[in-house]
Length: 447
Image (cartoon, rainbow, N blue to C red; front, side):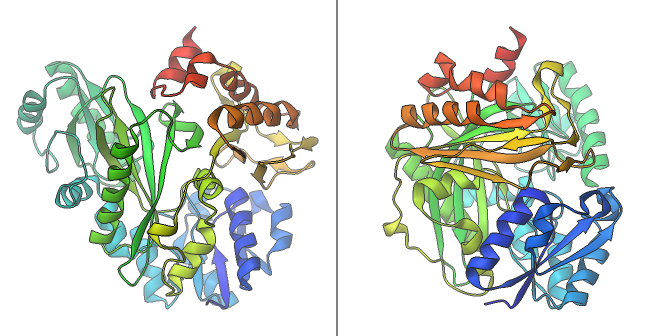
C-alpha cells in the first residue's frame, strides 16, 4: 500500500479521497489554488500545498506544479479525482516517468479508450454494440457525406478526443453536415488540441445508460452493473440512478458483461465507465469510455456496497480487485442529485458567493457528499457543483420519495441551487414512471 497520496483535485472529490485514505491508513496531501485557500476540507489532509492562482490553467491543470508538490511532500501516488487532469494521458505518463503512481489506468490504456475512434474499433472486437458510422475519423467532406448516406440522416458529428458536448453537431441534411463538420473540427481543435471528427447515426430519442467497470493489474475485470443518467441539460447530468429502470434484465446483463470484456481487452486497471445510448427498442449503442471515476459513482456504491475510491487505490497499489463478479449483487435502488450553485430560473446562471446557511439532510439511507459548510465561499472559477445528495431505499418508488424528502430538508442560503428543480422532478409523474429520454428535461424546461 502507498505511504502518501497527493490529491490533484479540489472540493467534494478531494474530500472523498481524503476519507478513503484515512480508512486505508494512508497519509494524504491536498493541493489548492488561492481561490480555495481556507476551504475546510484542507484541514483534514496531512498537508496542503498551494499550487497557484485561481485560473485552473495555472493551478489544477498545471502538471509541473502538481508534480513539484508531489516531490516536495514525498507522495508516492497521485489520485486525480474527476475533471481537470483525470483523463490526461500525458499527466499519467509524467507521473510514471517521475516515479509517482497514477491512481488510474496506464497512459497507453487511457489514450486507447479516450480516443473515441480507437475505442469504437476495440469495442467491435470485444463484441460491444456500437453505433453505425465511420470506423475512422473522416478526413474530407466527401468522406463525411459518404458515411452519412450509408447510415442515413440524422447523423451526429463527434470529436474523436472530445467530451462534455464539445465538438459535437447534429446534421439532418447534407447542408447541415457540411457546415457542422467544419464547426465541429474547429471547436474540437480549440478545446482538445485535436480536430479529428467522426460520423455516427443519431438517435432522436434515447436513454443514457452506463456501466461501471473495474480492472486490476493482474488482468482481472468486473462490472458493477448499470446506471441511468438520462436527466441532462446540454449534455450535463443532473440526476443519476441505479439500477436503470424498465430495461430488459437479460439484455442489460449481457451489455454489462461485454463492457467488462472491453476493459479487460484494453488491459485497463482502475475504475472506468462504458457509456451507452439505448433506443426505444432497448438496443444499446456504445457512446464512449470514461477512463476515470465518475461523479455519479456513489449510486453504484449504494446498491453494491463496494467502495470504488478505496478499490481504485488498492488496485493501483497492485492488489487484485477486492470482489469477485459472482459475489456482486444489487440491493435496492439509489438516486443521486448533483447540487449545483446555479439558478434554473435564469437559464442555470452560475450563483457563486458566500453560503451563510448550509443544512444538509439526514436520516436513514441519506448520504451527502459535499465540501460546503456555512461560511464557505463558492468560487466563480470552477465547476458549480457544491455537493451530491444520494439516497438509497428498497425500491425505486421508495428511493424517489426519500430523495424528495431529503431535497425538501436541504437548506443552502443565500445562493441559488438546482435543488428546487430536482425536487420538482421527483414529483413529476413521467419521471416517476421511469424510462425518460435524454431530452426530457429540456422539453420540460420549455413549457
